[in-house]
Image 1 (cartoon, rainbow, N blue to C red):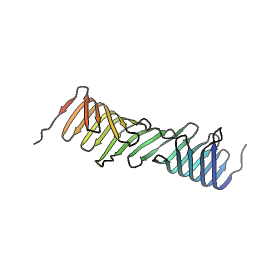
Image 2 (image 1 turned 30 degrees about the vertical axis):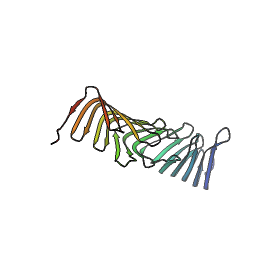
Image 3 (image 1 turned 60 degrees about the horizontal axis):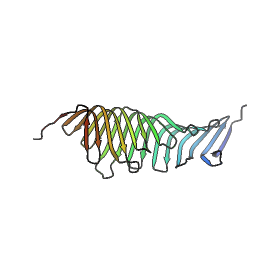
Length: 243
């Protein structure tokens, strides 16, 4: 059955759980309703999750009444109560599947401590677990103002915020002041509160550059607190004596 198209100003829509508790709401400057699709201008919505509330904004949105999913378009910004902000050009939000995803470039910032950027993104709606598909760059700003740790890779990168770890894949490069580490894969462990890096384990074709000195190995573990590196797998060291 076809329904007549409707135009509504100051649009508002909300969804509730079976127990009657509101779990999401969305507002818009205007909405065009046509059958099972609602096109919304100036989207401003909230997702009420068990642990936190998330704000979602976009210039345009298309809401599917059948499955309660939302396609967001242009200047998409997601902000959580714990200081995580995501920016992208488009995003598919599926509350029932607990999934948000996009093929576009994504920029994510956690307060002033951590910044991520990559092409293609999937995560649960609380952004506890996330995957950046390719061309990934992650920056950790040090609170002691001693510099910045930068990690780049071809991807993908799998991040688990709750457990405080991330896995970087393919052509991984990490720089920390004068230290540079290159490897096939890197596993990073960080404090979930401060986001401070605790250690990084790199494996496969490991190359470490510190000043003019170069080290090769199959595996290395780097501890950020004392800048200590433990080498495994037939390490080879090349030193250049100081004059």
